[in-house]
Length: 81
Image 1 (cartoon, rainbow, N blue to C red):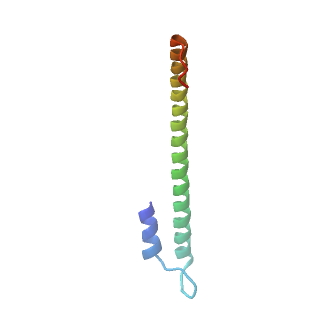
Image 2 (image 1 turned 45 degrees about the vertical axis):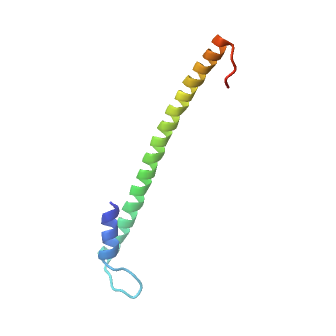
Image 3 (image 1 turned 90 degrees about the horizontal axis):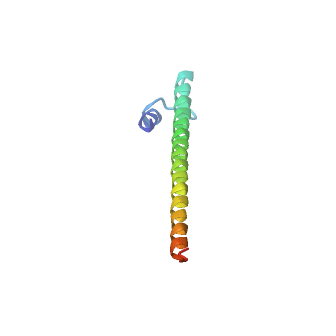
């Protein structure tokens, strides 16, 4: 997606002050800009969702490990943590 966006920006219709461009050229640029923003937003949301699952998994693992440590402490009358 990024490659397509860069191709449109650099090799597509040139839009700027003092240049002649049509409404279709402007629409192409705007749609390309909006699509790249939506793609980046979707990628960030995907990463946040994945990190959230990872952190939940680590929290459960931490709870299980600490409960085992407490069991070991009670069994052998030790203080580890």
